[in-house]
Image 1: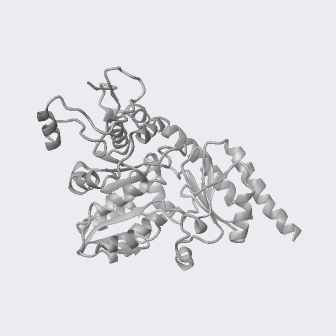
Image 2: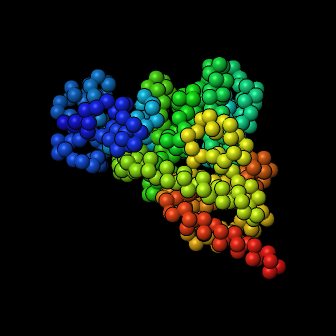
Length: 407
């Protein structure tokens, strides 16, 4: 029989403590580390017990596509951290985002979304939803009037990410929530860039929050995962049966990895954020950098909104290298510590060129409208010493200056 790891109400604990103890269950062996349950199915003492579980009349697990003890611990811990009533873990961040949208809509419904979205999310909104008779409208996320104008009587839900990928645009979550709720719709927020430590969309009025747990939650580049957080009523109405029968479930092993990573999430994100702020200031003062985008800086276009809804500026910095793609490539290729990758939220610092990676499928004019120019780079700041990172950036930028001087 499993017992909770602490007799205290976990909701009375502070975030760092919840990240270590929240949701944990101990088996009869009283292990200190969460147990990894690699099983597909479960036994019942009697046929009547199986019947009761499948009817929902008795607690317990039936099949790991539906639920699993290790996955359940991860879900409970994430719900405690987010301040949500419940959570559902998925195989990836895109499974979470797709499930949160598809679980709500049917043919004839309408979705409004911010135009600044991760490339795969744009694909779901623009390509997948219309295949099933669900219309979609993209709007300028920072323009509340655009959200008001896009709402229709048949609008079922709205979707946004803030800060956005990759230009770190900040959208007024509370403002959008008020607009969609006034029209009977729901709001889904992708909070992956801010992390659950720096921004709390449910408190700002969102109905559902999604994460790619692959990013900061794992934080070490090891495993894929996603999670959806909402009220119990939202999950029961829109997600329970959809996820149960379509099967985008998180593996127990990946859930176990995520549980162990959550123990250090607050430490990692705090250090990465301090480094990101320092790097953003350094880049802003360099003549080879045309522009820096960081929500924690006073020159960010939506600084007032960021200050209102974000506790910190986050772990990512976007910046434009003067000279476009050739200069951006030469700069990134000269880095010796920071790695080239399209991932983010890792313990290792990573840099990517969105125009040729995460958003390469968009037409050039669409990328330009989103601010994704040929010189734009997105830096995910890791756990290395910040002075080493700045020295690495500086030598790469100095190489650009030297190259121009020699021409």
